[in-house]
Length: 508
Image (cartoon, rainbow, N blue to C red; front, side):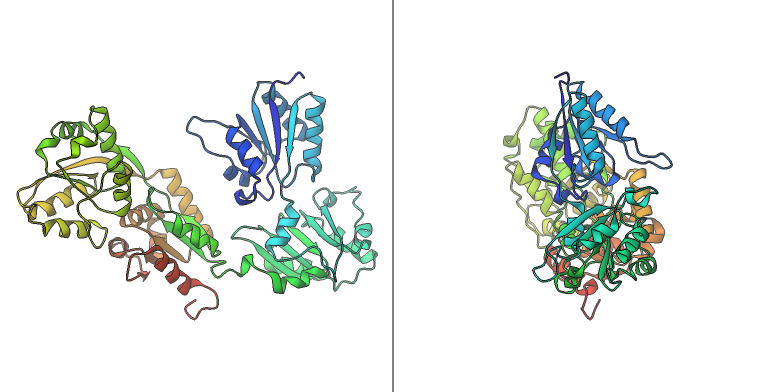
């Protein structure tokens, strides 16, 4: 064959990462290039530090229409002939839509090797997320899948009357513009206007909406609910079973919009749990590390023997110290005579990953608690202590420990920096979604949220604080604290959010 590369035509299903097939994920992880048509598919493409895979967006952008089938096929052929492994993402299943079939035919005609990877049927997924079965022993023994995209245009040869006469459950993707033709076809077929119908948008997402009516009233119901765009329409008596089978939009936090602020090394468990409960989770931007001049750190490493204590403020401080320790030709043996302390559990974990355990365990993992714990020790007065942190905490921490009698060298290794673009995007998201709550998982994360959100959002969104230090950071900025568990614990925090915002609860 003339082609030396290969094109993998991968069905992306409803463009949800959780529904992408294992084969699809494997191919995306090894692709040299990915061609995609829908913005939602960007989340399926893995990010790489070396810039691979190359991305080619061929969908609509602003006033620019999406690329033609011919242009997409030519792009795929060109990339394959450069000896590339190319993934072409297709919404739904590649052979369930005409666009995919036409492009695959063009690859065949150009003698380009290809593989077709099935994807979850979009109509089926939408019905399942809405709790609507497509088959029933008593209501329907067949299902007809159709697309309303081409049917909405003049001259369409889609025979809705013939489809209606099958008596099957009918599932129509992209049904919004074709709805008048669909309704007219069912009327001609003699189907009663009282047959149930459901319109579904954003299936499988926290913005999912489902409207149930009859075929005769579904258009008015959609207008009243403001539903339009990429609508999946289900027509049939099985729609009545939604009352018993609805699950996705019946979850206790469905419809709640919650901002989660966590540090870059903080656990994802809280955000994931809130998503599982149905909330729309908006993750606040995370500050990135900007390293400062490390010459003083390198000097301190050369003179480690003069210190008795080494205290770390964060996993980033551990990482930067460790890199410089190793590059100096030293290793853990250089720390044998030092006592080690740290501010929080994530920092203790970063040390443990390197074979180092801490010598001080405080009841609460926060800077104030660590200062109190160290101040009470008899070996602190007169001791030489090296404290490594970011530039915002080095000075205050050092001064507090000096009051306890320690001789402190506090070094600023890095600065937390928020990207302007990420902050602007975050503020736009907040203005669009009107969050009900912000959940802050650490004082540092709270401070990053405060900088990113801006004054309006800070004053209008109440907060749930993970611990006392987080609560203090938020309250000092004028944020209303509505949740503060008695014990810092992720499960307790999620339970408190559920009690406040969950459906069918007195506090909701």
